[in-house]
Image 1 (tube, one colour):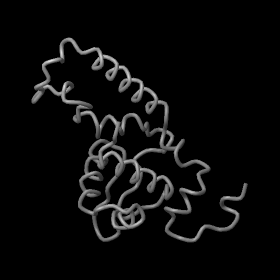
Image 2: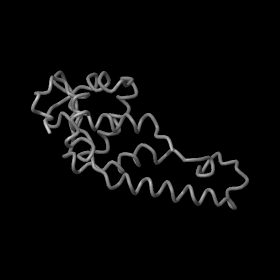
Image 3: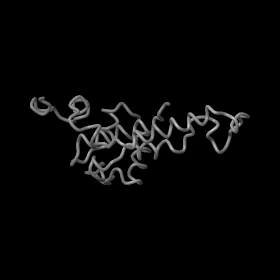
Image 4: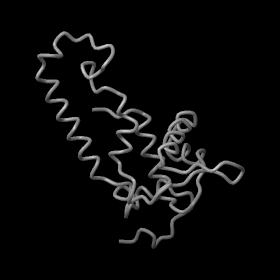
Length: 153
């Protein structure tokens, strides 16, 4: 299984915002730290804002922030938002499926179960699970130097 670039960027945006929870961050900062195209990032931020994961603030002092606490952002929901329209294989597509084996293929059934298990597992994770006590992530994404005691074990 391979995630789309948009899903990958969505999780990066959310992790960046979670590392800076309580602050307004700019898309340009996220793009720089996450090695992302500003154009692709803007598309992802738009959808995250529309679905209530982030809050976009317009204007000179604008930017974005988490729309709800990291503990209430389910990673499975984020994956489903960005991946649901992408069929895992041709035979899962409502349009354009030319596979003559679709009705008899047992592999398709196995893949469907595996994909469902994947989404079920992602559904157990929250954004907080990804960022809480993750000093390596904080060091990569923080906009200022971390105090030496910030990640002391």
